[in-house]
Length: 100
Image (tube, rainbow, N blue to C red; front, side, top):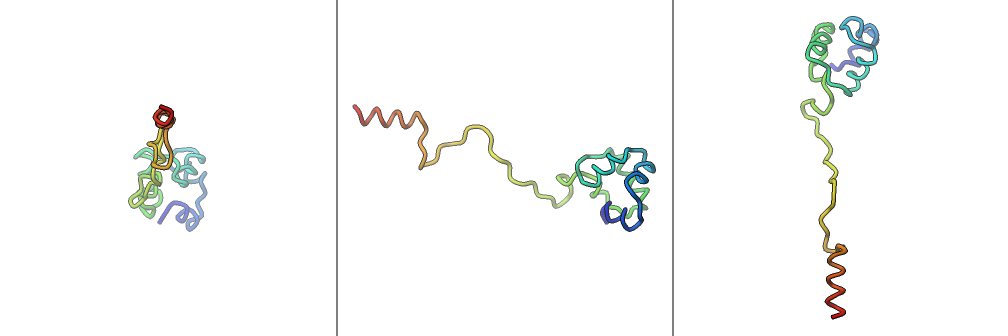
């Protein structure tokens, strides 16, 4: 079970959970959304508070959860020229060959 489902089933809001494990309400909200990587102590405190009903994998950011696939990285920096597009240096070289 994931954390939001557990909270809804047991009617526990972020503030109550935060008070029980010793963190802030906004931090619990970020954990629930998968935006932060809680310390092992915080993750285990939440796990214990929920009577081990929330899986530990649900308490780490989505990118670190088993089975999560990161989207492909966008290339950075200069890209290699393709056949249909010539670089400025290649264009200058071809022009100098034509005019000679």
